[in-house]
Image 1 (spheres, rainbow, N blue to C red):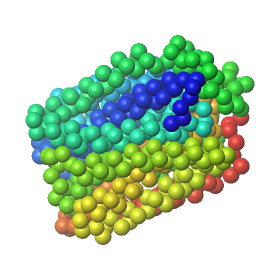
Image 2 (cartoon, one colour):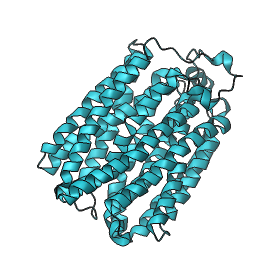
Image 3 (tube, rainbow, N blue to C red):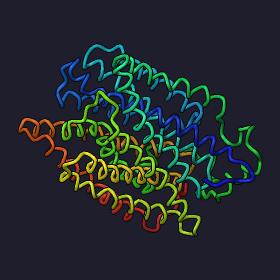
Image 4 (cartoon, rainbow, N blue to C red):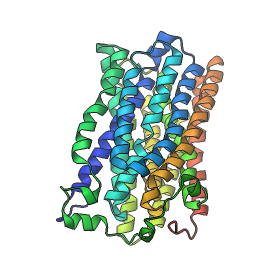
Length: 428
C-alpha cells in the first residue's frame, strides 16, 4: 500500500469494499457449513443440494447483468446500497423457510443481490485508484472473499452449537445492515468527497485516460460483447469461477467425506485453506502492481501474474495421494491462494482496457458468464459425487474434480494471451 503525503482516503474506501466482500462471502458460506445439519433436517440428497447451489448460481448470473448495468447508471454508492440491503434480507430469510423448495427460492434471491458486490467494487477501485495501485487495491478488497471464508467456519459452527441453524442465518445476515451505516456515511465518488484533499484527487486522476474525450458517449452492454477486451474477462471468469465455487461449497464436504472432519465444530483446516487465499489475493495484486511500478507495460504485468497463478493451481492434482488431512490442506491451500491471485488480476484487467463508465457493465457481462458456467458445474459435481458414493468411493469423485480444477487456469491464460496480442483500450 503506497503511503502519500497528499492523503490516503482512497484506502479508507478500499477498507469499506473489503468489509463488504467479507460479509458477502460469510453469507454465502453459511449453507455449505450447515449442509450436514440441513441434509438431515430436510432429507437432502447430493443432487438436491446441487440444485440449491445451482439456484444461487443461476440468479447470481442474472444479477451480474442487472447490477452491472444498474451500477453504471446510478453509480457505485447507490448500486452497492441496493445490493447489500437486499442480500442481507435474503440471508436472514433462510431462517424462516421450511422446505427444500423454499431454500432454493431464498438462495436464488441471495444470488441475485450478492452479484452486485464485484461490479460495484471494481468500479469504485477504477474511480478511486490510478492503474499502478488498482491490482493491489483489488487484491485487498478481494481478500474479503478469503476472510469471509475464514470467519464462517469458526462463527457458524459456534452459532449452530449454541443457538441453532436458523440463528446462524439470522446473525450472519444482519452484518450487512451494520456495514451499510458506514458506507452511507463515508463513501462518495472522489469528485464529490469533501474529506478528500485536492493533491490526492489529482493523484487519483493522474493516469492519461485514453477514453476521457468520449465521456458523452453511452455504451450499451450488447455493444460491449463485440469487443475482444470484454471476452478477455469472459474467458477468465467462465473457466475459473466454477472451480472457486467448488472450493467454496464442497471443500467442507470433501474434508468430511475423505478425512471424517466434524463440521459441527470449528474447522481449523478450512480456516488454514482460506487464510492462504488471503495471501494469494493480496500477493497477486501486489505482484502485478510492483511490476508496473518497475516499468513493465500494464497488460504484460497482469498476464505474467495470471500465468504464475495458473501454474500454481496445478499441484492440486496431487491431493488424491494425500492420506493425512494436513497434507491435503497444504496442497489445496496453494491452489486456492493461486485462484485468488488470479481473481485479483482478472478483475483489474477490466479497468485497464475498458472505459471507466463501462467497467461495471463489462464486469457484469463477464460475471454473468462465469456464473452461468458455475450454475451448470454443480450439476456435474453432484452427479459425479453421487455416482462414486453409490460405488462406495466418493473420494474418487473429488479426485476427478481436482484434475479438472488443475487444468482450467492454464487453458484460460492461453486463450487470454491470444486475445490480448497488440490489444489497446477500447476506443469508442
